[in-house]
Image (cartoon, rainbow over all chains, first blue to last red; front, side, top):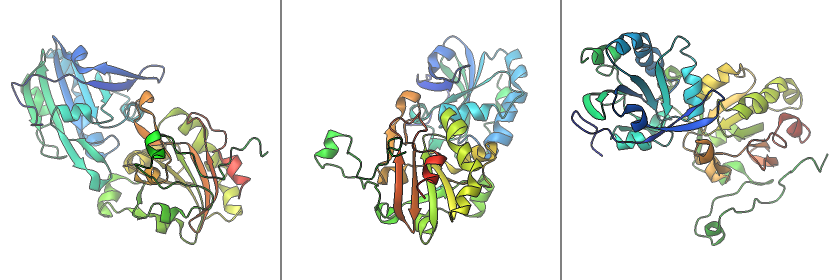
Length: 162
Length: 197
């Protein structure tokens, strides 16, 4: 699948999370994004350094600013299960707005054309690092790294587009 | 005591019809199995930080290095950061580490189908790294070779390990315990295997 690009329609997909009672639940991306302005950013792996120390904190810290500019949802996705995502999300106690959603079997990541083979690093197939700005299911900004590096996919970069 | 233990002395029954027809044949684990021969080209990944991974060039540990000439207690579980695993399965192994060592056990090992970075973060959260060696079977190859996988898609976990424990001496399985239901810790707990060493 070709990587998602500006002008594309955002595909639908099912992601997972743990509810307040720690039970696994699913949600469709379209139900969160239809008719709304959303940022979706993807990371290669929970509990890995760039993801934990640089990529997520940027969005956590600037969430209010993003909301102020009309962003309805900020969604972080990773190819991890919902238990791992839930526990990883808790390592950011100051987080108020970023939703951590699990793409355990990489189905949605594949639908976006953003899969990355990190088998030799012990991670298997994961997501490339990316950030998308999507308005009413249409991709307005697609900042996609070629791998796991952290350059264009930051919160800073995507704020410039708002 | 024997009635409380579902000690799988014999071979595990093949689950699927296609397997019974012999279309796929996974090596099975049972008492007497040589674990290294049953999973010949399989390695595990020691729980580590990313930096440690980078420094070691993402090295893996062949089963031979883990089991050869050693007395090992190994237990597997469905998933890091899940309830029963975190609250009921790991802690008793950690708390009883002195008893294991007193019985001559070289290593107590915990393994799951998770990547080694998640395993590491989880092990640190459980404060269990000093007592237990954690390994990630990130692609499931170890558990698949031993026919110890189960489908936990219902819990949104996908293919995972059964909940099990084994006492392995120089690579040979001396005792093997596999839970009927992965959400239980009945036969795969630390107390049961302590009684089998």
